[in-house]
Amino acid sequence: MKKYAVSLALWLLFETAAVTLWLALDNLFYLLNFSYIGTCLALGTFFYAQKVKYARRLVQFAVGLYMLAYLGILCQENMQLEGFWYYLFLGVFEAAVIHYAAAKIFGPVLFGRGWCGYACWTAMVLDLLPYPAPQAPRKRLGFIRYPVFGASFLFVAALFLLRVPNLERIMFWSFLAGNLLYYGVGIALALALKDNRAFCKYVCPVTVFLKPASYFSLLRVKNDQSKCVHCGRCVRVCPMDVACSAIPGAGLTAPSAFYA
Image (cartoon, rainbow, N blue to C red; front, side, top):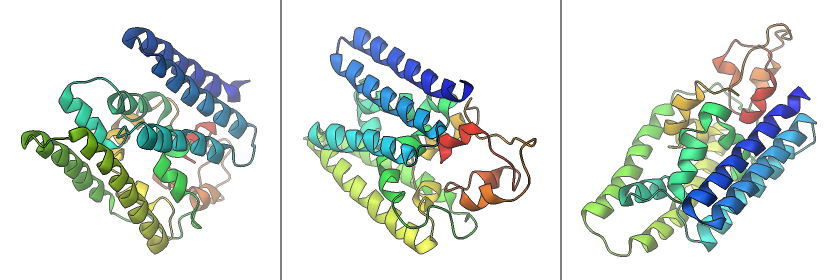
């Protein structure tokens, strides 16, 4: 039963957050929202542990489409980084602020970059491209994410400093434009570098939050030397090049599923 402990722990974690936010903010939405996401993630990791084909992809679409189509487009909530800055400037602990705190700032201490593998709506599309395993060594382009991160902050800060009217409407349209830009750049990079996750490695500004916390994650990728035969397969097939940052050819334990 040990391999299902992660699924159970995830479900309990999200249910705790769901009930806490529901009672604290007196808003039923948070109970339904976090219960849905937690249940999807728990089922996804459960079936992944059972080696069910496409288990990760199914939960990726279940969560990703919910956040993109329902929260982002129908409810007109900017769930991108700009939405986080927007609510932070307003001093409101809701929507994107809760999302970023749970999934990308504090949450990764527990589940690493599970967001990237199981819930990201950008990666949801990029993972459909024809290069799941990188065709070339990782490039030193990670610095690009920092100017993108800074530009996002400056964009929202400028809106507030200039007292631009209709900020909510601007946030909605920036969400749509930002996603189209992310998809366009992500697909172009994937095809040019023959690596589906090139955007995630070099451009995505969210990793500025994810990286520090994931270094201390309880569910980070680890080497299991007792099982390793140094065949190098993990390096060849890992879509995130995670194995390359460890010992080449090292065996990976179950938590690597969160990076797959």
